[in-house]
Image 1 (cartoon, rainbow, N blue to C red):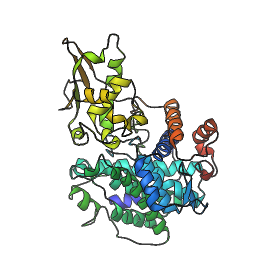
Image 2 (cartoon, rainbow, N blue to C red; image 1 turned 90 degrees about the vertical axis):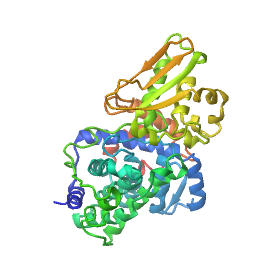
Image 3 (cartoon, rainbow, N blue to C red; image 1 turned 120 degrees about the vertical axis):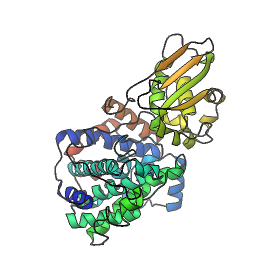
Image 4 (cartoon, rainbow, N blue to C red; image 1 turned 30 degrees about the vertical axis):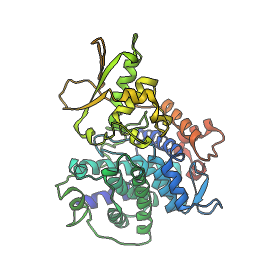
Length: 441
């Protein structure tokens, strides 16, 4: 069976997922909703709302956290852009090598409103989308990103389409068309890392996935066998590299190996060093004024993302090892407020970030994640196997609730009057008969 046929058949026939998958899905859907709420306060979203001019007359569907209504396709665009505006959304580090949940959830929300889907169906379709994004990520391998493609914009578009197709109940033939339509929407280059446009990648992926499934439901057609066809997806996005699709749903990616929840609103390549910086800062006798230099060691591929040693904007600061580590050492935390443009101009941060240096390390290297060298020659170093929030050190409902609280507090307009009740509604998402009752805030 071809990769296209295998994906289409899987998407069309999954009607239940194991309870363990559903429970992890709830965590990541809630985490993504926290990011959506927080992102409503961002400058990229402010501009997008002004340009797209969604209404307030309760026509169409509500956009979470924005206090406006729009047609469903525009809602997907707005929601997806919100979800990734702060680079706070979850990641699949070694399968998709990117952010799977944000485009999938953002495509499923308007789909769920249109179809009056239950919470249980939503979680199932979300899990299907994650499976597509991550297993396709393994299939395309590193050749995809080496060519400069942003996986959230490419694989995320296909995953959003597949998830929406599953929620709409499309058959295998319709699903194949949805995936093929999505392939023509896919795009997005890594050269836009550290700019407003990176968040737009997510919005466009969500919108494209939503539209691809809806068009296919109405018998809009596209090419067959599109992933492996000549001039198809694999030819275009991997240079024709051979691809083998891992088994779908065996195991489910949400459980094994799982996704990483971000505990800091910045590029995940900085998180090990941030964890180490916070540990070092808490040690007895730590004196920030006595620091001579700070050495950080990362995987080779992280160097291309962390390209702003002296960031000029809050978005650039998210992709700056210098800024994130300096701020963590100075403050003992990293919050959304630390990435406001006025925050990065603080004199104490500017003085410390120039002492940070970043080096690539090999997998078998014994270099630490971070080493702080003091003026008297003393050295403090930390190395963790995984960052906090990773599948092997997972975030639970306590961390997710904090993210939701922080996100809702920043939302442009939130109708979540009872925060605690809202959190529990999400935790009981599989029992909700109409998803629209929960996600209309």
